Length: 252
Ligand code: MN
Image 1 (tube, rainbow, N blue to C red):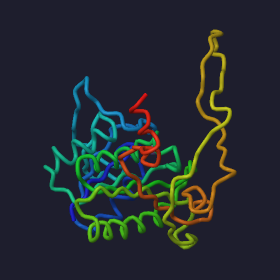
Image 2: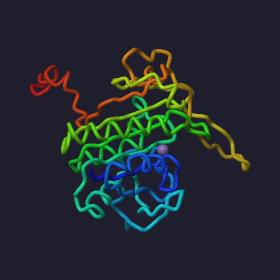
Image 3: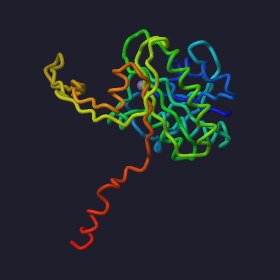
């Protein structure tokens, strides 16, 4: 199996090293990742300045490629320039922090996986849903290995995108896997207005999650139940359910 590994936390992060080490026995593994953290960059791509691709070292000194581009840029460069299209699967992660519910639209981790699908390869985005300094990578890394094998056997050359989120607990405490749908994810008190030392206003985006209705069957609920959540995502955002009802607009 030929695997491209990327992320949005940067080539030096612990999560991408944990992922690379876990999947290495599966075959040939190429790492192309941002040279610095690029979380919450969504599906941005670089069109108006030079994109660089340079030799880099991961946290343990392992050789890799890094780019000044976004996570999506790294997938494009990795698949087309480094691996010349000879790729079986792209895996993005392991992200340090959640990529749950509607937040996937902000996610560089998930967008890198979407870029793979748009180019023509199946992809897995993997996250641990915690900002803690200490992360238990092992459990979700091993689930990712099994998923990679499954995708290779069952969904080669497909548009399958699996968004995986795991709680930050030891592998022995995980309560299994649940296939889920995205939860809604809304925030209150999103804008924190402050004053800088010279008296000018500035703003800090954050807020508190309205997660109280994390329904059964959603990714948020599965993770809160100590399970690994797997949500299949699709690139086509057409609101298929209302297409027919809107046909009348053609006669406005
Ligand atoms: Mn990140």
